[in-house]
Amino acid sequence: MSEIELKNKFPEDFLWGSATSAHQVEGGNKNSWSEWEKKNAERLAKEAGDKWKKWQQEKFPEMFELENYISEKACDHYNRYEEDFDIAKELGHNAHRFSIEWSRIEPEEGKFDEKEIEHYRKVILALKKRGLEPMVTLWHWTNPVWLSKKGGEYNKKFPEHFSNYVKFVVANLGDLVNFWITINEPMSVIASSYITGVWPPQKKSILSAWRVYKILAMTHNEAYNVIHNLNNDCKIGFANIITDFEAINEKSKLNNFVLKVANYFSRDKFLKMVSGKNDFLTVQYYFHKKIKLPVQIIKTNDRIVSDLEWEIYPKGIYRILKDLKKYGLPIYITENGLADADDSRREQFIKEHLRWVHKAIEEGVDVRGYFYWSLLDNFEWDKGYWPRFGLVEVDFKTQERKIRPSAWKYAKICKNNEI
Ligand code: FCB
Image (cartoon, rainbow, N blue to C red):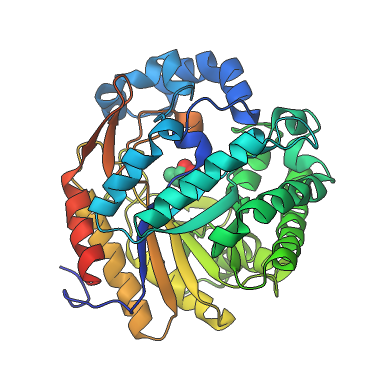
């Protein structure tokens, strides 16, 4: 079934783990997103009927409930991180990616909260105690309320505000962290907040999108300098969502031109703007898209899809990795995963993607880690709680955790360092 061999060893010291982000798992956050949720939950619940297919509506009736769209307690990971890291350890992970919540660290402009930084110190120490290498994201989309009032990432001073926060965090935690991720998925923010306008601040304009594009590149570059000024030894990158675009008609010159344009704006241009400011590259792979002109995303009928109807297309990760080889930097896959509530596709999903990752490694791509998204079922932004990405199932009423069967299959891979 697979085009590649079944049994494969991964390089020594390969990082195996999963990823989360503060707002999606912690609970109790007050930031740009929690404010937006309060204002938009009712609308989102009403729109679910138009947005999702019948089978999805029947399988996930919670999408019609207002509470689905309010993060509130999330997974209560803020209080339960030790229990959750016990699970990650039991599952054979040797690394973990998580994010620090800016709104906790700097709840008011220029006022840094010592207690909260102490909290994250404990989080990192809890990981280390369990033999999990921390990969720490500094911005996973949420802004402190004071900053979102000034426009958040739309504000030209965003890089400066971010650098001040980063300085404080790295001065306090830098001794414990080898891997920093400055910002998460600039392209998702640009696309969903400023082009389609479905995420806060819902500014729908190409000019705003371009402005934020430049601001986020600058934000990364400045943060890179700030971190390295404090700590020379650590490694720094940003979390990059990369879509595997394909021309619908490979022979058509026009189609190939559209493909080039899509790749240029969604990856190459940004990478150029941050060149020289990355110690490693990352891949967050979720989407394979066939395109043609006029710009159109083509869906074919034979696709295997997740609960969100995102196509499952493992080969895409291979093509992306091969493309990134030219940059000559180590690569970490910092997110890859699917929403699969009944866990019927997850094992296969992970194995197939890893087979293609391994093939890329065999062909000389320097891939050094894989982080499944996510450790826990969590709050999936404007979609809320119904999409179930976790290796671990979470009952959001009782906060009970249940390890899914696929998590044990992934554990075997992590423990043996091979598929
Ligand atoms: C990524 C995000 C992550 C999660 C997954 C499903 O784009 O970085 O927070 O929402 O998608």
